[in-house]
Length: 87
Image (cartoon, rainbow, N blue to C red; front, side, top):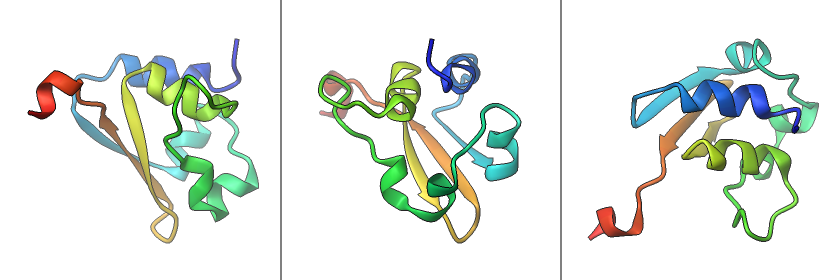
């Protein structure tokens, strides 16, 4: 089990297509490393088939992509649209 599983579980329970969590709210779910608060790339939405980033795997497994606002100390999670829905 990934240390980011509590975040994935939280996101799975959401019904909204988009939700924003502050770093403080995220810290209530998981311990964020310092790099998560400093670098956009920590929040990269990598290909889950090839990435080793446990955090990315967690939010994508829950059906979301992460979009950080480091200056605002928050992250918006947006539901991943199925390819059929994008047309």
